[in-house]
Amino acid sequence: VFPDSLQRTLDAHRASNRASLFRVVNTTAPPKKNRRPKTHRVVTKSAHKQEEEEQKQVTLKSTQKPKISRRELDRYVKSRLRSDHKRPPEWVNQQLRWGMSVLQNRPEQWLWLNHYAGNNTSDATTHLDAEIRALDAYLMPTSDEQNQVNELVDTVSKLFQDIPYMPQLTGSWRTGVASSHSDVDFVLPVPDIGRLKDDIRKPSSTRPQVLEDYHSLLERVQQILWQTPTFKDKTFLVYNRIPVLSAIHGPTGIRVRFQCKEGLPSSIEYINDYLAEYPAVRPLYRTTRLILEVQELFGPLHSSIGTNALLMLLVAFCKMNHGRFQRPHGLGVQLLAFLRTYGIDVDLAANGVAVDPPGLFNEESTRSADERWSWPEETPAHIRGQCALMNLKRTAGFKGNGPIADHLCIQDPTNYMNDLGRLCTRTRDIQNVWAAAYARLKAASDDWDGSGGTVRQSILTHSLRANFEDFERKR
Image (cartoon, rainbow, N blue to C red; front, side):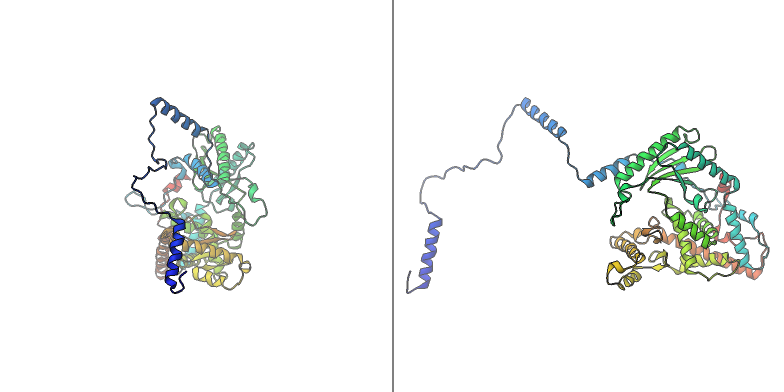
């Protein structure tokens, strides 16, 4: 300690501390070698020993059980199922041609006028109403075709008596909206034990374990069909999102599809109730569907709207315009209003359509509706579903996925979280077709009122422009 200098005292203490940690050695001898082991040690072995060690390593790896996660297992199951997918033959997805073509010698036809039951030709609205009803009667299955389908259902029931889950008729032939060329759909109701619990969060109905069970069951169905002379020539199992078995009934040429689900779709009951409440939906459905089929814009095969989605779109339109069409022969007015609403007035790429309660919703309306309730539990179920559907479109837009962001959004009345139009990514094309059909149909109606027409002249053909040669050939 230096009483006169603080700096000298601190320096002395620092030197003492350093001396206790480091020891300075002054020497002229060379430094000793590093005693640490070498990191890259070269070991020379004979070729025989090296081969023996390699064989031991291969044997050890083959006997060890690989550890895979649950996610990797799910991916493996899905990839194995998809590996069974081969390119389907043409008959699996074959569809009728409805479009007219001068080059292919397919002229425009209006064969539905043979079922025309109208007498008053001075009013275009009445004439158009009678034409829509005539088209509905023309496309409707005949009594012989209905009997063939009934016999086919009985045949399928007898074939699969040994199957634990009896196939049940579903689709358009059960709801009554089928046409003569419609496929016959069957569902094998397979109960999902994991989803029978009363838990709030249930497992997915399309998880890999369930899909593998569906695939195995449909393979068993396919083997039974192979042993049947009427089906053995054409059967094919397709795995898309879920397995689907397609077959052709030899005597009638009817295409049959088998699919596994938890049970019959609840939409069947809803559709039957809607058709009873709004009888105009059935003829309008066949007319609007034919407008799209002429342009090859109907069905999942064309990334377009399907049967249930189009029916719900019509039901929502009738509900939103309840009491508006009171005229006795008003199908023509309703068709024009439908084509104008969904073809011109409403942007279906930005707005969703709700059936129950009926209305339109978009990102702004769902946000404002969600802010009315302070707690999520207080928000109505249909509002929560609309928010979820809009979030899906908004997320797809942020990621630059334009087709998904603009897909047709129709809220399922049986499940508010389900989107009936999620597979339809050609929303703009559908609206353009409906807008053009409205313009042609409106102009033809105005010309009819101005000049007056005859019974054998058609107004509806201006919106269809269809050829029925393939349909007549199949019938």
